[in-house]
Amino acid sequence: MSSSFPEGLHHSIAEPVNRSVDSLVLNYGDHLRQVSDSLLQVVTLLESGLRALPWWLLLVLVGALAWHAGRSWKRALALVVLMFLIGVVGLWDKLLQTCALVLVATGLCVLLGVPLGVLLAYRPTARRVLMPVLDVMQTLPSFVYLIPVLMLFGLGKMPAIFATLIYALPPLVRLTDLGLRQVDPSVREAARCLGANRWQVLRNVELPLALPSIMAGLNQTVMMALSMVVVASMIGARGLGEDVLIGIQTLDVGRGVEAGLAIVALAVIIDRVTQDYGRRSVRQ
Image 1 (cartoon, rainbow, N blue to C red):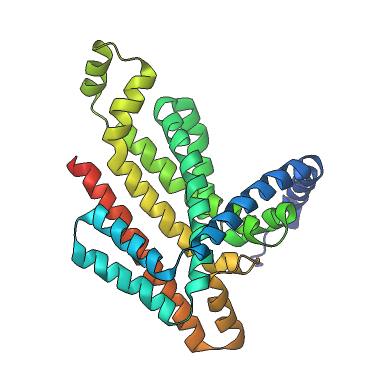
Image 2: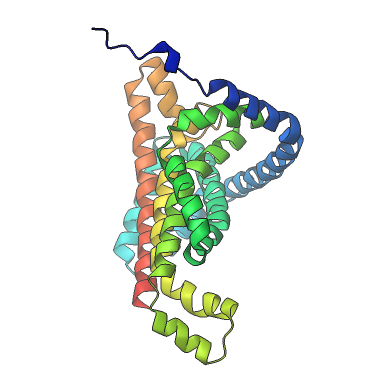
């Protein structure tokens, strides 16, 4: 007996999806281009600002930030050495490009993720609707949503940022929602009894108590944004991922390993700093 699926039951969703994307491009393409141009200016200014700083001053700033987060000069020195080694292997400029891309993408995730997490925590209907959407965003292969993003924004940094946003946003939304739902109801009621309105309770009581969970979400978001660096290089974003891609295309193992280790070093630096700030918020 044949194990093939009956042809009469075949039904493709490709055409409806293509029509929807085409309609989006025709009706909203100009508006999306304006948003893209504005974000591109932000990325360009950030890259220029990072390049304008002397390399040694950037190392000092990273060391000061690491010490302020963890109050450990040994850890701060280790992170500075890691960043110094990225420059030693000749990837300093690529490092700054990647940092600018990740910072802008993470900033957009924070601007969207925290309010969405608040919405999910206090609106059960929104939670039922958005949770499946977050599941799809987190599990859909990145190359699938690169296609419409490329149609809307073309090649370059902007499609990379929006693709990173789609991939890295869900953890921050989920952990913001989780942190707010874990706030002790008695604390919330005590604040209301003292005359605080809903906005004051959220800003002064609930968000500070949920901060450890939010910081954990931010940490995961940054790590997921960094994991998109190589994919972003495939659509013209440049940065450290570009060298990994060139190493794959030319079978230059050494170049690929150097760039890969530089991405790992950057991930370690950001991970340790965000984790230390998360621990500080727990202690406070």
